[in-house]
Length: 334
Image (cartoon, rainbow, N blue to C red; front, side, top):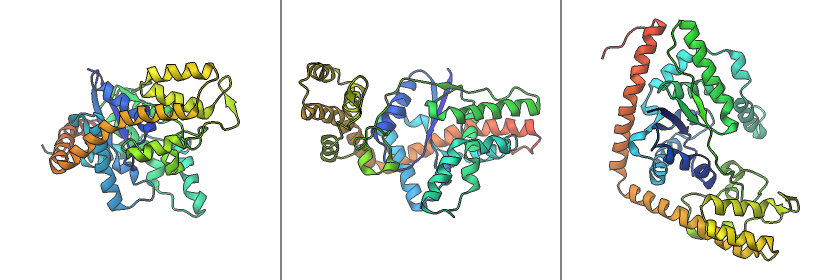
């Protein structure tokens, strides 16, 4: 069975864009592949953060993913597998400075930091982030990594690092992970349908996957429809975004009926928003119920994920034993 690796940072709430863009697909892939899904708390340290909040967000993300259908045996917390860091250092010694300077994420996040403070501290961790990301992938010898087109650059670097490591040490050890592109809907901000749904834009720009029904309905009811700039043959971006949400939620009967109204020039935005709200609430209510049930058994769930991380770590430890042998480092006992 081929291996799939994908990770997510514990940055707070999961929103509809996260679910339809990644997590929904992760759940499906578990039936076809050996899957490793990581909550990557080391990565969250590359930007300014609060230690207590990081720990809380890490466990919250674990519970969110389990509530969405991720199997506990496939889930690990990155910092519970410290071999990621050791491999990152080794791989960093086969990564060129020039490659890292070309990574767009470093540039984007540096600009983000300096928007509010031109003298903001920019860490080495932020610069070297892609090497740790490569270690996350290569340590499990992943065959595939589910990515969007905007993440392809990071995976390409991982492939380059694997190739250079193999060449430098004269051994075809690391496979070259392939992107696993899947069709995922692009979920847009309800407050600005010309922008992708994102937490960084503020609370009104994303719909919490575990949000209270009243708030979710209110957000959809107030969603922007006409922006003054029709697209897609006359349909405004806001209206198209609402239809896309119906399709993403697999509410096709409502989608088709309302689309017929639109084609006939008889569509009422209130009817469209009501149908979208019903579809979204119908999707997320079971997630919230499972999340609350998991929270009620918090200690047991945490123990389960710590055990799963320990089992997954065994595979990482085997990789490090082999890498140490290849690179001339000392052997560890056990």
